[in-house]
Length: 223
Length: 223
Image 1 (cartoon, helix red, strand yellow):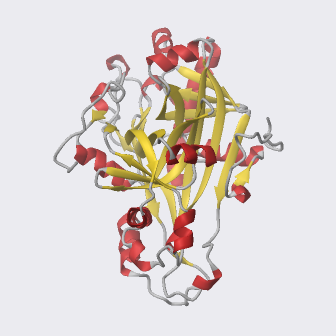
Image 2: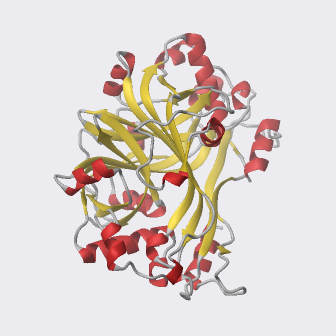
Image 3: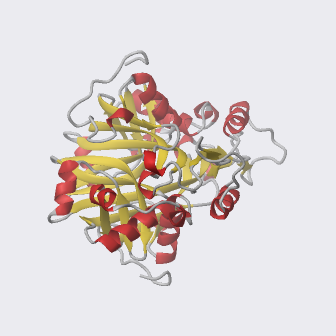
């Protein structure tokens, strides 16, 4: 699905409240997924919900989910597939209203529901791992040692099609009851964002080594 | 549970890998919960997992979860209770290893599992709402209009006991295969953190109004 199209809402992806915040256009959904790197992956184990922080990357219409979901869940993903819900949330601001009830946050989130299956094919697995590394720092996958056969065999990556997908976006200022407008409380928005600090080379990196270009650009763009 | 004690591990909260990252002491668990404001709340709806970003606050040994989980889930929470998993993740750094496989992030996460029940008692509901507002900006609940009876009736807050709880923490530098030590790739950690920008007063706030003390202190401590 390219960025000019939209995902079809389903009964499960239509929000039950704040419907005006729902977005289904691929451009919005993809931009949120591409800005994030960590999703919260939900699945059912022994009848109970489990939510684990999970690194991911989007490649076209697929979300690749990295790492362990536990042996039992991984067996399910190996076989018929594992029903999951992958949610990505970016926080943009704290909304301080004059009434307690209207406090909120500005955020952008994406919820992806579907059946995740383990990636078995070597070329796809390599591409998925590179994408996850590049989701951490863009351009990084070309500047590290690729996985060898043993590492590949140990790696679990799940593939989740972007099909039943929705975004929610809250932007802007305070929403308030009209009768509260004259209350004396400070009201407004406190912006928040994630920033990247100066990269800290490990002891094995030669002193004075310049930062690679992609890393300098990343730190500068997020600093 | 006070901060000098520890949560008892269960079969469900013992990690299946990276066991050295697991923490159960209340001081670590509570510090992570208190630094966060947004959890990812998982539950099961029609047999499938759902994960929604949810504002929360910790009050002693209880997590209060704010807002809608959908009408059906809320009915379950009203009745026997809703099985949930609430996960909070704070990202501290991007770990760039010389091998793709050893890329990671530094993070602190808490997973809380249990049965959430809707808060019905008015005093507890008011205290929970204040706590959620103070989790957004400490001290804020004393500087806004409290909920009236109609607002309280519209508000859904779930109560989740901190009982089956675990934390995972990754800190420090690159972990690497010894044979990769001499590879020429830059390796190290890129710190990341959430920062708070200058508060933006809404149009109804009188020009030149000073920031309230709690807000100035918050912005300065997270700036």
